[in-house]
Image (cartoon, rainbow, N blue to C red):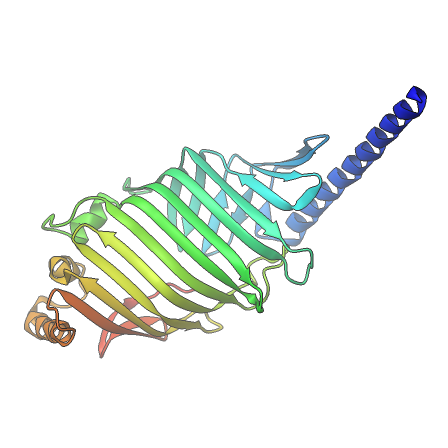
Amino acid sequence: MLRVLLVGIIGAFLAWGGYWFFGSRAVEREATAWIAATPEASVESLRVRGFPNRFDLTLTQPVYDTPDLAWSAPFAQVFALSYKPNHVLVVFPHDQSLRVLGADWMLNSSDMRASLVARASSEIGLDRANLVIEALRARGVSGDSLRADKVRLASRALDDDPHAHEIGAEVLGLRPPPGFLAQVDPNGALPPVIERVHLDGVVRFGRPLYRAAGSDARIEALDLRGLTIDWGAVSLNAEGALQVDGAGQVAGDVSVTLANWRLLLDGLRAAGLWDPGMDPLILGLLGGLAREDGDETTLTLPLTAQGGTLYLGPFALGRLPVL
């Protein structure tokens, strides 16, 4: 009886070891194939460890580089339980480099990790994902730094539309760069910390987010259910629907409601949104919109995006980033 038990234990161990060995090789092959098929991505080396219960993939010197977005780090680690390989945890190093729309940033955090769950069907790909960053600091080439106590991002595929993801984002304790504060709030009427930024919406992509999808998974539409910013006495709420054309230009309508909007007037003028000679016209227009709301401290702005430019009525407020 003991001999049978020992043979069974050894057999199970060998079978599991064989499963882990072939599974680890499959993980390594899939990662290598994805990098080879994605010209934007490269690594210095990769290896899989974690026997017997995990597949631990370590990427050395990973780089992702496109004209609008580039990221690099000394390493990145991807962990998955060997009996649940469709659920992975990604751990990032404390220091990373990021370039967004031509602006370079050095990122530092006390902890940054992401979780991704893929659906069983490869035709659907990503089911849900989240990213949590603790004590983030982003430093630009000019020396200005942006800080946040906590950043949370989440995404979940909609059951009735594999092209669409419900998204949520929250930033707590945001400290903008001093240069931004000096421009937007030159009189120091607002605190240096934005207490909370919260985003809720649905993003529709041109194709499902396959696990192998790269830069071709472009955004086609954004349903902005709510954008909230709480900054001292000023609060902002926005909602609307936006479409993105093949060139990445945004079009659509957004309604923005500002509480205590007059605290931002000097900063908006200093930012060059209008010429000082237009003060009577702008103040008359905004004051009239506020009176329509029945509360002169609250202002609702009907904004329109067209051809990648944001408008308030006939006035162009600025260019929007290409998506």
